[in-house]
Length: 478
Ligand SMILES: [Zn+2]
Image 1 (tube, rainbow, N blue to C red):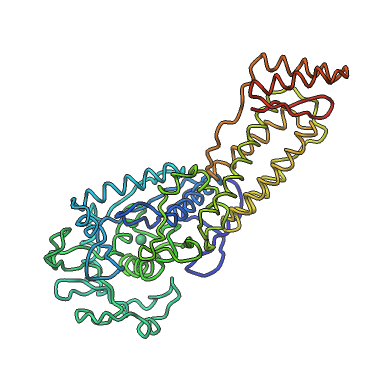
Image 2: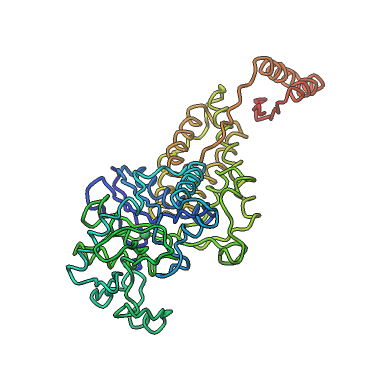
């Protein structure tokens, strides 16, 4: 385990704090997953790639990370409301198939996208429909402790019983009452109370028997129940999610968990920011909903991943088709660099004139960027600087095999964090091309430039490019 101070911005305290795990060497992390009624959009990609980087950097630091991400398969109603249609049921009716078939299809779709984006699968993906018994038990516990009450078959959390309500999102209860979109639900004692269990109307398909009614869970309760079940009935380390859900979803999670367990839910809340489309908020009604699958028709998934890493996870990103061009060029730059390093490392080269101390200079810079709240753009800038420096050395023929191999090893180590799959650029140069190149070198040494040009043409007609370096050395590229 490296002794390093990792600073994370904690939404709960609204400042950067040193990360201290609850158990030495281990991290428990819960991330709110998507509601599976449609394909993942670019905002999902941004969120889950960001959380993947968190996890991979923690692993780089030597932590064993237990990573849980749910798939919401019931209880998330249209407009995030507490009455009306379930998003999954709505889609199921439109497609005339069973709701669980919708769930299955879109979980598979999400997993496909996550795999393309090289997101490491979670240790477990819980779903609320598999947790109905535990959810009921949890709600019974809240009623017993008088944090919740039953009303006409539904159960509500009483926010006034939890004085810290609002601490995560920074909203004050009084302001919420003034500003809330009051639904005027007569079943609620206070209009800010939120549903833990909802009595089903006859149109609902997904419903279960409970002590209160034939109904289904509210949207927020699942994350409290499943995180407690899978990370222990205690405080866990990191809770991730999208900051557009900090209120009411995450705020309600905190209230439910802390009321039930009598303990702080999570020590660090790390929330990613959203992706706008052409400067506008993404929404289905605007028709600017951009799916990962659509982008993948045109771009390598690693271009998307690199584009995401080019912003710090807490800043708003703006997606427009043109933004990926820069990322595509940068990916090519990295790929060419890795290919060149592999070629150098295979070619017998003159002794390097200057050895770069990679472990100290570049590793330090990489780690200090990542330790500052996972600053991936700064960490990538370190890579781009290293690329410039080594490319210069290659062109001046100052890079020896050993140094090139060390740079490659360093890249492989930090790329475990970036998670970029770089196309294998190492080119096997056929023996006849190597012979032609050697003959050309001799021609150049003896000043026979006509023969040298002739040999260059032969090499090029075979599909290779020869680049001249200092002292008549050369580099062959495809
Ligand atoms: Zn959640």
